[in-house]
Structures are given as C-alpha cells and as structure tokens.
Length: 83
Length: 158
Image (cartoon, rainbow over all chains, first blue to last red; front, top):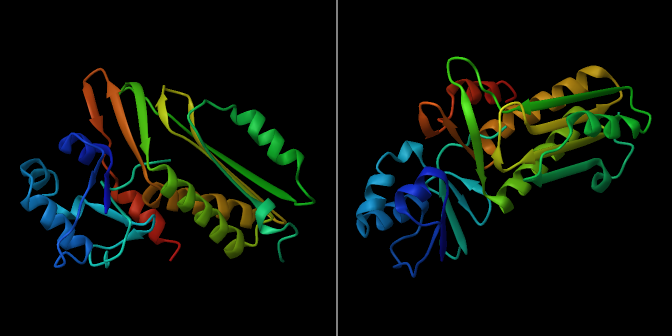
C-alpha cells in the first residue's frame, strides 16, 4: 500500500510517501495511524493529535474508522486551508 | 429550471501554478452566457494585511484528489441550484500578495442561484479541497491553521 503525506505532516516525517506491506490486523485508518506511529518516532510525534489528521483512501475523503483493506493509496494531511 | 447544457460542458475545473487574469476569465465566462441572466464571479487573493504582512505564499496540493473534489463540488452546486455552468480555477505553488489564488464563476437564469452556487462552492472548497497554505512573512514562516469559522460556513449549507 502506498501512503502519502502532505503539508506539515510531510515536513515532520521528512518524506512525502511510504510503501508498506501491512499486517492483517491493520484494517482501518485509525489502526494504520497507530501502526505507523509504533514503528517510527517522527511519525509518533506527527500523528500525536489525531484530531488534526485528515485522511483520504483511494482519493476519497474518509473518517478514521474507514476500512482500508484492499486500498491502493491512503493519504494523510492536516485540515485543509485552500481558497 | 434545468440545465441547458450537457454536464460535460457545464463544469470546468482548472488547477494551475501559473497566474491568471481574473478580468479576462470573467469576460470569457460572461461572453458565453448561453442565455443565462446572472453571472457571479468570485476571486480569492493572496492576503497581506498590516498586522500580518506576507512576502510569499506557497500552496501545496494533492492533485488527483483536488481535481476530483472541485469537480464534485461544482457538480453538486450545478444540480442543487440549477446552474447553467460553473468554472473553478485554483492555483498551487508559489504566489505573492494581491495575486489571485482562486476564481469561482457561476451562471444561472436568475441571480440568487448564481450567488448561492458560488458561495456554496467557496464554503466547501475551504474545508474539503486538499490545499494547504504556507505563508512566509517578516516574522517567519508557518503553515496556516484551519479556521473554525470556515467549518461553520460550510455547515450552513447542510
């Protein structure tokens, strides 16, 4: 699975994307955040406040309980500030 | 009051890094009025106020999702307000004070639908289109924080 990071998440992680083979017990967005954080100190800090994390699965905005099994791309980013 | 154009012609969404000319865009949009009686055009500019002077703003975006979200918003507005056509231009990359960032244009038979359509798209765009502002000013550089007022503005359309 490809995981993308944007804005200050990308900066704090010092990379724009990861490629992961996820264990079977990681089935939704929230579990993916916990799994990434558990394996990476920078990610643990960057994802510390989950209220500030928005997610998209295969180019669809989703809540953190959204199922990611079989998804190709998950993107994480802060609240949006366009316009 | 249905749409007089097919949906594929009725919606245009452009993401670009280049600066655009809001007046030229407005004129072009209005010139092809297709019989509609009301056009609303909104231009968002790079803000730089005395209490927070900005030197440069950089807009990061998620291209595929941004295109899709803006098209969805335009389509929703078209159907909800019975618009004839909608055009949205949104820039990304580096830009400077007074430059245009975004232009939303709506055309309808009567004015209220055109006002509401443009307003609706802007309110949704603020919170649901994947763009992030990074501002560099005299006092340093920072990612712009999302505003609660923008969430409230979006909620009024529910």
